[in-house]
Length: 292
Figure (spheres, rainbow, N blue to C red):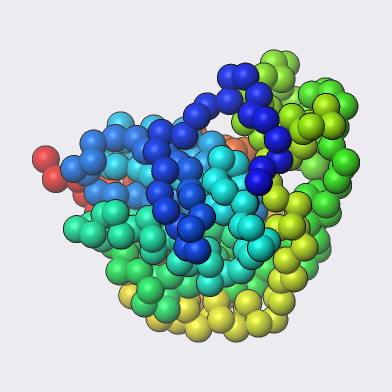
């Protein structure tokens, strides 16, 4: 089951993996497979395409980058029973990593993907070499979270035109310039049987109930147990991870490095991919250099 037909020009996945409960996960890879493995996990409502620029930059620096669509997103399968809980996200990640048994991966996760990455490492579920968290931490601002959920819940009946899709994105991200060429939107939407454009994600994903208090305590516990090289990247304009939330994570994990990218919102990599990419690669080249 999916949101509809892929539009012409939508990039096809480079490969697939089997995730938890028979879900097929779609993804892309960049770089020499012999280089250190870097796994990129996107946020809610995003796809692997959010990491395209970062993945290519990592490849140029000698790393082997991998990004995949979370279940219910992009070109990955929708869960038949609508299950999109945290434990399944963790199992999907572990399932992919079983294809790389000799690698101690670097995990880079944004928002939802950052939560999965933090728990995977902090709870000892994944033996990682380094961790980068992008605009996420134990304490998230309810207002910002509600804004993300509100955006995903809009336009449940789809859009009549690509211009309408662009307008909805512009209203959510007013700090970004609107694209002149709308063909790039193809990777974010599907054409339904009703002739309307729909977002790529499973609508049932939006009905998840996020218990922020329970999430916060579990994330705090995981953050206290981080012993590997860790980087936190925050968008200076973010209303999801506030500066106070960032400082709480840094207090829980005192050895973590911190980069605050001014001019970027919650979607850090999409807003300032150039600065984000340089920050992550600088961190990795110091902490996990590529062998000559």
